[in-house]
Length: 577
Image (cartoon, rainbow, N blue to C red; front, side, top):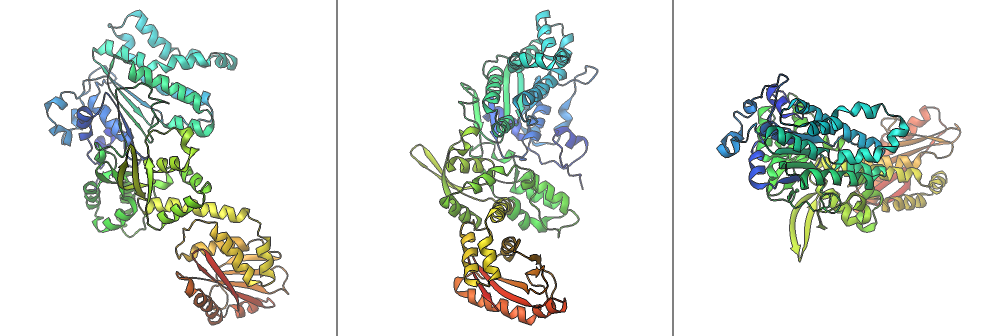
């Protein structure tokens, strides 16, 4: 079995180390045939965008080794689908200088730090092409530009803090046109136009919005893109990737050569994510064909264009973890790598209507929303509609169908799979737990101490009706909820599932004053309201059969009081045995 490349993002690494690679090389052909001079791909995180750009670079780049010899990268495509794309496409292999820039590391807390990180990335690209200093096709003025943007970095680093602060705007202006200058120098040296690849362009924008310096970062990125992608005669073509399409007005002003391909675009759907056939082939290669239904329910469910795709990161992680151990339970791999703060914000800001929609989705239903692709980060929270759009385009919802009404597009959407459902349920559970902990529970605690079961049921029902249903008959949810409500009852210590008598009561409150009785709670759940009294009776019978009260006496406590508690959706009744 081939090694599975977890965390590898360089295309060459997969071939050099004989790792399992899902062949996406025909993306190169389609970018030439169907893309614009600049093509923007927006896809969710961890859907193969960085690896795709590395593959594109490997194909197009006129690359040199340390001794100045041209590298032949044809070996990295032998046996791949692109080799059948025809001579017109293959004639482009290894023919272009390439600028490759990743913006994904610009996650600093202030604009100065984030800019300096982007500056380092740009300087790194100049360093990759430092051979230009020895070019006999560049004049002294050209080499002065190169020297200013690359070799004089140490001069900036030696400046005092005051000097850096006073010269910061000038430094921003200088590097906002750096990609265009590098393009012009490369074209002059190679006598060929340049291919520009920019990965995760929206990371610094998202970070700057949440950290409070969005206008400054938008201004820099806009200038960088306008000079490199709009007014650049040295540009052959560009490919830009990100998670979310940012409106033309904020970043891509006047960029008429831009072709945007989002998850709704008809072309390129199969190139980001694993298709059904690709997923089945990978499972077969690692003797996991019998786990196909599990993988489908957990990691399938995305519709990009006309293609049905699986989450590639999750499939790779699943195969890595389950090859040789197919009985292991699946895990929410993608949810542990992506930022879920937007769902937390959606839940925390939800009104009654949004709560109803979330409940419908968690129950497997659908909702319909008007979608628009031009979003700005500073407008995400302007409306619930914008929040739903963000969730849809970033992989937290999937398209079921769509319709048009005039100029408006409406998409019927649902939660894609079990993995993403876990994210919603986890965020909702955390939100509800925080609400319970922050609430004033004194009235409930007094009802417990006075054995006022009617008030206990009323108060618990009131809390549940403020929640968003995630449980659907899951006793563990109600158990955790009731335990949180009982913590802090005066002169009692709450314990869960401790053995008493011949079993384990769900929750027991042990008195700090031994003469006081212990309080036993047994929980039952019913799906129908008219069955709740039966649930209460079952709880009472279990308390008797398992002799919970006798176990309390054997521990030396003076006695016990037993409560039966039955939940049904957002209702609760409490009884005293």
